[in-house]
Image 1: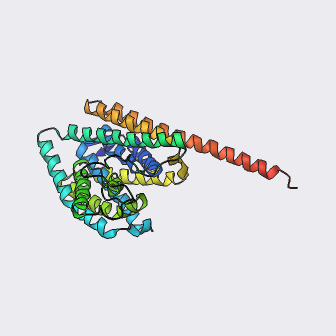
Image 2: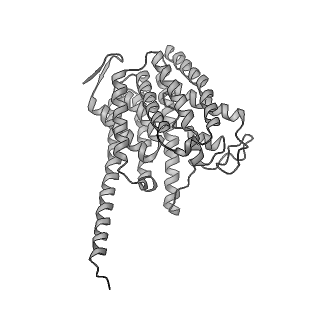
Image 3: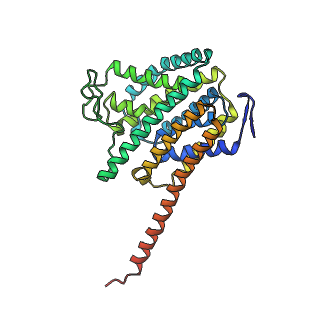
Amino acid sequence: MLSLSVAGTAVNPLYLFAGGILVGILRQGFGQAANLFMVPLLNMLGIPLNYAAGAGITQNFSNSAFTCLSGNPKKHSLRRVGFVVGLMGLPGIIAGRMLYIFLAERGIAAPTVHSAYVLLTLFAAFGYMRHWRTYYRHGYFEDNPLPPFGLRWRYPLAAPGAVGLKHITVGRVTAVGLLLGFATGLLGLGGSFAAAPLFMYVLGLPAAMAAASSVLPILIIDSAGMVSFSLTGNLELLLVLVVVISVMLGDKIALFFPAEIRWSNSRLIFAIVLAVSAAAEILNISGSGMPAGKALLGACTLLVAIISVNLLITSIKHSQRTAQVEEKPVH
């Protein structure tokens, strides 16, 4: 067992390391929705919720820092918008931490955070299921993560990429920053999960521009979130090191997978794994944390195994076709 003296607990290092690798692989393969697994999984494995959230936000910060310092993503597109969103996220982080402390004093912080993760995970599962259904019917995926609802609201959502810059207003930019900061402070989720969708549907940016513009605010919000968790004594250094290293290793492993995995039927299985995660969270609330954590680890492992087998079969078929072409005589 790995003893975590600051957190006052001990965990199985094999489960911890395997969980980080799986989250890294799934995040590289299916996007930032895989971050929804990290904090609940750490808590299910026996780590107190506040330390699990601290490790989650630190892992998100390391990923956002690497993204920001690495080459191009369109060199961060609308930087001024991103910078303002990041600054507006700072009071949101403070509000989120204050609410967590307020709820913790009344003994209801954990159920509140777990319930929020259940709702977010089910929402993400719905989105991936909807994308898979479009792929199954039409053979392609649409770029937008949400259906075009809300365009007739009094305060409508933006249609991504179709409205120019008219939705980039002070009020909307402030709202995006506050929401990202609040989720970071309360849940330890980090800005990467919701930044691009909010940039698309609140500010009206097309998908590629939204992803690029969200790099800077994610870095600002995640770094401030990490500092806030550190100042409240909710960072366990050994836990953070294991999580960061294992997730980075999973990211590197997933680079061997072709990009096509996110545009295939494996997206349906990922949606099912998200639903399993929501069910595991409910079990965790009821006090069955370790069995729920093992079930979630098993579901993630099964998804990665299915992807690996599909890749192996595809590689063998490709090699056979190549050999057949080479054997044919040229006339």
